[in-house]
Amino acid sequence: MSSIVSLIFLFIILVFMRFSYKRINIPLFMLSVISVFSIGYYVLPPLLNAENLNGYSDSEVAIVLLMALVFFLSFAAGLIQSDSWFSNKPGRCFVTPTLDEVYRLHSRKFFVIFWILWIFYHFNTASSSYSAEDFEAFFHERSVFAGALGAFSSIFLAGMVVSLLIESNRFYQQMMLLFFLLIPLFLMISGQRLAVLTPLFILIFGYVMKGNVQKSYKYLVLGIVFLLLISPLMVATRQVEGFTGTDKFFSAIESFNYGSDVLVTIVESILDRSDLLSVSILLKDYIDNSSFASFEYYKSVLLAFIPKVIYADKPYPLSDTGDIWGELSVIAWVLVKGQSTGSLTAFGFITAYREAGWFWMLINGFLTGVLFSFVWHKFGKISLIGKILFLSIVTSLTIKQVPPSFFYALLTLVPVVYFSIVLIFLDNLVSFLWLRVKK
Image (tube, rainbow, N blue to C red):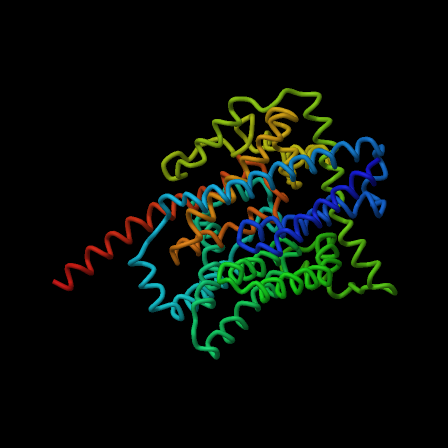
């Protein structure tokens, strides 16, 4: 049964990818990227009899696959329909004309500044909770400044891509591309495939934004090939014990090899992520034997938009207990690893199911698609600074939870909301001062 659902899923994915390729734009390219990753997460594991699914019945696997498929279809419907709505009635968009002009005039300088700042951040901070030595301390003990730098790191990457895309001099453009492509190599040390792919997909979406479809798909294929090649090494790095940071990566390199059959090694490393499908089975059983999300859960979403400097003790986002232990990815860790601190990805469909069951999962998927389209049309279409803001969150939206639930996607916008308010104020201030100088 699970194989049949997987094959149906694969057929639908291929149909959407063909549809997206013929009518390429950012929303449909987002759908294409999510479709590609869905093959790895949802289609291949059941078809290739992934070891992580051996402990579960065929019907259990089929049910979570069906949930993922339903959520994917409702998401695609919301994305495609709302793209048409916003295209016909664009309304007001985020615009910062003065800052756009300043950025355009000094784009090379901004590229250099962003590259240096990103390098400083990367080599002086745990890039995520996964690379932190203490998972719980990462969230509770890091400073507001460290959290802000984390949000800025994706802004730095997006800013570099925008500088590269608006550069007219071929030599400078090639040099920018060369320095930018060093970043994924640095990120390999983390052992996190998502971290390595983030700058590459920001670049790919940048080319789509510029209208260079051929180059976009060329880099998408190269990105997938790069992922397949480094995937076994990333798995090996995560499995190394007794080391942290760069020592962990270099320890993995010393003992790593592709074995006698490179293709088998690559496929096995991709199937390593089938554990997330088994996690979804555990989470569904957990949700079915407990209540749906409480009021505390929804309150945490609203309060997330209040800056931490104003409300330091706000509840942990998407937690129905107010602390980290009530968040679904942490619950997943406890279900798999026992009572300890850690996190395992909870897919968007299972997060939506936790909120109110199957019917809400349909609505949630549709709303998520609408939100994706909204973010593109309101931020990424016109303003140069808006494009930077959009690119800074595009990978979190597309390749982290494949696709995410509505409230998770909404929380991804929190730093964008903060930056937007500050940037609009700065744009008006700079414009006012510029007029004063002219007079």
